[in-house]
Image (cartoon, rainbow, N blue to C red; front, top):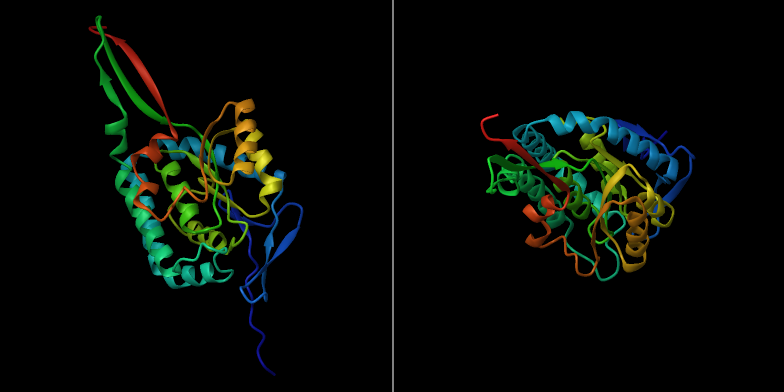
Length: 290
């Protein structure tokens, strides 16, 4: 009798654990030929709220880590992606790229790894460039330091499901934030595999939480959730309008990139400005001689 292979049951990664959607709903992922691949969890607003709670719980401990230690952890994650580069490449090819957005999957994996190494290098350096000692007229010592914002909502684009996701996650966590990310709707499988890598990495559970599902159901809650302090998204004008309006009501910072102009393949999609967008500056006045 021929052996029946054991197929993977995809789950989302929340709070350091693999879970199904609380609604038990799924949607079918099909390959480029239209053949069924897997049932992907269709996360709900309740799943998002649970993920925010997990991120908020992990936040204080992650923020207290030294920049050097956070850099080590990101570099270790890059090593793990390098070791499973072939599997990541295959996960990108499952559904193929959206029309007009085709790129080499191996190139996407290589750039994703390089992007993690890039931010690992920034981990113990960005503070020296974003912080400052400020000249003041008076007997005071005045200095500015950066602090993480807290929970950052990340919404990845479809054009590069792995690279777009990591391009938004890495600058958020390198500065001590925690992340609740919504994977590509077109091809969420690379995010499923990334969750497996995160679970065996040195990154504490809850620092990065990965959800899958439909944007139209999740984006309004991302926009309005009061405990999400910033949004970093690659989205079109309609979704961007919903995010901006909800963020205005809940007073959160928003960084939106259009799928056409927000090219995650270029060197402009990384760097100090991406870190600056997700930190707050705290200025301290101290009397001289006190």
